Length: 224
Image (cartoon, rainbow, N blue to C red; front, top):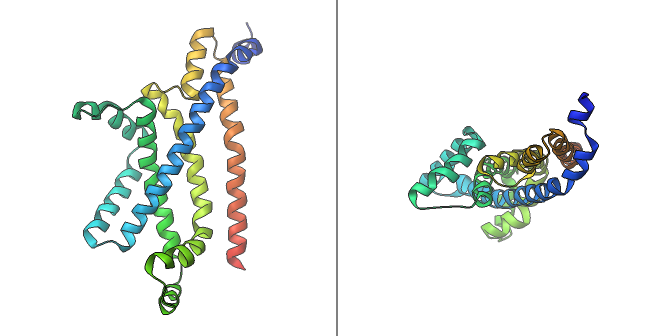
């Protein structure tokens, strides 16, 4: 049997497509959930770190440092396998979504903090002189200007967190990698793993190119 028959068996690949597509749908859902929840939580952490009382700022700093230092896999294992000892039992999808969101929030918080701090202080003073309140100033003045700094690295982090969804297979979630592994065992052939790799590239490569385009576009707009 040739290497093509082993790793690129078209018959096995064709029969495994329905299985892989179910896994792809779960992967996309998990990635979107982590990005949305992580972005919202990251914005909250960034605001706490910048404007909350000092004790809360220290908590925010500790959270971002800890989450950025811990591997996603460790966080996932702690949530899925350790929390049941405290009486908290989560499904594999929920555990994966919580773990990825927590880690993504830490990276999002740092990016958003840098973006907000890049806005000149004069903008805050001008808004205050116009009688704008704090939240209205943030929404109308600061956030729109910070976005040109935030969007490119945030998009890059989104790509990274989608790749990290493959770790959900560790807690038996039926993501793309888990489905590919099951299909490999079912057909006694590694071709489904190659199929999963192709689907990952097809999904992530356009996002990588989009990230590069955003970096170029916002850098050019910033120079102007």
